Amino acid sequence: MKKRSELFFSAVQVPVDGLMIILASLSAFSIRNLPEILLLKPKLYHFPLKTYLTVIFMLTPLVLVIYAIEGLYNLQVTRKFWHEALKVFSATSIALVAIIVAIFLRREFFSSRFIILAGWGLTVIFVAVGRFLLRKIQKHFLISRGMGVHQVLLIGSNGKMDKIKKIIEKDPGLGYRIVDHINSGSLQMIRQIKKQMGLDEIIVCDSMLTDSEQEKLIDYCAINNVAYKFIPTTLQTARLEAGIFSGEPIIEVRNTPLEGWGKILKRTFDIVGSIFLIGLFSLLMALVALLIKIESFFEKKKGGPIIYKNERIGGAGKKFEVLKFRYMKWDMCTDPNTPEGRQAIEFEKKLIEKRSLKQGPLYKIKNDPRKTRIGAFIERYSIDELPQFFNVLKGEMSLVGPRPHQQREVEKYSEYHRRLLTIKPGVTGLAQVSGRSDLEFEDEYKLDVYYIENWSLWQDIQICLKTVLVLFKRRRN
Image (cartoon, rainbow, N blue to C red):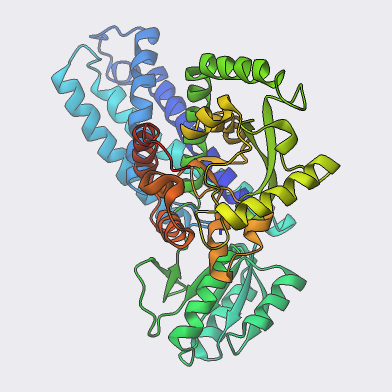
């Protein structure tokens, strides 16, 4: 699990690199007359600063994309400077080739070979120095304030694990703090350690652990947002990320790609997407609000709210209030804090017992008599869920993810079902576009876990597009 400080410094790295590229380009421009001065030759070209800046601002995003492709934005607490400088040199050289090709095709950009070569050399130096300084700042906070330090538990007793332990204890700059070193994979012991000291990662090097024990450990780590890493034994899995730890091969089991840059990309997509969709559906939401308000005057309990807030369980088990257009009669809304609400809950329990279409933790009431006329229509086509775009904008939900469930539903989960709470719930999701509310809970769970383990931004876009088509299919009542 990546720390907030790691995400922050990795996100800041992009604008810092962009700034260094621009400064390097301006420095190259400022010394553009140097060859003519040294060789006492007249300048053979004229290139205005305004035009030059236009070209630089066009090329800078291209260079940053090449940096990203070359792996310069992979999230790590610490990196060796010379290794990183070499990657900067390599990536900038690739960008140089792309720029030379572009100039060959369109010579009107500019024709100064000196500026091109000086810009390349200075970019390598400026970017490498910028990264060095940023890494020094990050390491300072890491060592002096413990910002970004990973609490790690070591499991296993052998020469390799003893070596890793000595390395971590000797070098605090690695970003690890050993909370304990145990010989067995006892979940009871691990839970106690996590409760008392906190836990971010587990490193296992124990050939005596059975596949069943390791699977339980992996599930525990996934549910509790603990990174699981191991020195390979017999475990076989497709969700692996290999690496080297002080010369030893080490493999991390990834619960989801939604860590590091995956989390940043998804949040960016959520913000941009929710703002766009709020604007797109603003007139429809205003119309629905007006119709609900008009209909509320004819209800038994008049003047009910337009938006109904319903407590749900979100990512990491945090409670939040999901926003919906009210589609039930106001006196039938299940607010446990009022006498009417408690009566409504009892009535709902009877309806679930007699009319529920689902088995397991979730329920779906057939021909629900509590719906208003407008409510039945907006619920049938999921229009009632449009206000959830504001939940997305606030960061309580994502556009795509597992369905948000109520506390009483979560209490009926089996332990393995809690995998659904490891990411934010979504307005839509893989389960919704595969069967909407008609799927049995266990089938819905399997689809959501597949989504968690195989997330990609492109998959989110596809699910959003499919949701539009699915909305026109009538739900079972």
